[in-house]
Image (cartoon, rainbow, N blue to C red; front, side, top):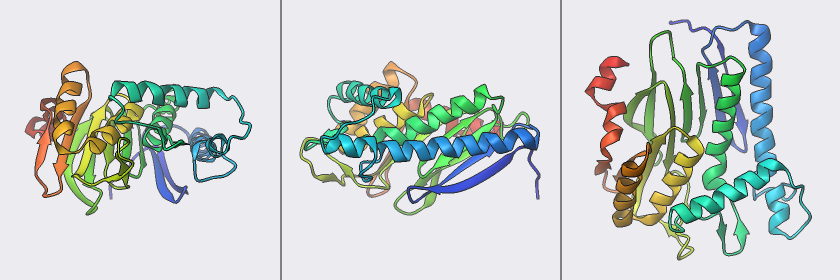
Length: 258
């Protein structure tokens, strides 16, 4: 069995296994508190932003109760409004009078955690929560991370990407509501968006899935043309379409380099 430096931990948060795998060779006395802080942060996010928890700030906001004006809450709500505008309303955290930032908050929380780990000296790490993954640095010296993108309906790996610094978000494992009709969208199998910010990738994946097959491809192409976010769309029948930049992470050259 191959031995890696660093350490890893898995905990269940809001019913979901979350793993933090640090590969930077740091002393155990430094790694343990890093992981303690990492999971404390993720639990705080769940307690603050879950609409299902009555005492969360989002739960209180939805019931018209007094909330604490914490900077993170203001940031998330503001960013959700910006993403709604950027996606033509296809990403929407306010549906039928209920605020639910779930399509953004998990990616945002993991992105913030990844930056904090890097600033603390743990620059080689992988964080996984459901279908959201953030990698930085190297899996082993000189080797990029090898990340399997799973079809969330079948729990099988559909594609493998290789990267040193990337956010990977997949939408389609949980119901996604069409914000224009209020109905659950089921026109696609799943959507994966990759890019430098996992929060944005998460929101884009949610929006593209909500659009349905025709609009999804058009928006994904425009998104790739205007910036660093690349998309893979898998139809319900298994047919796949990807923007050109996706191949840079999953093509033969990437496999050889990884």
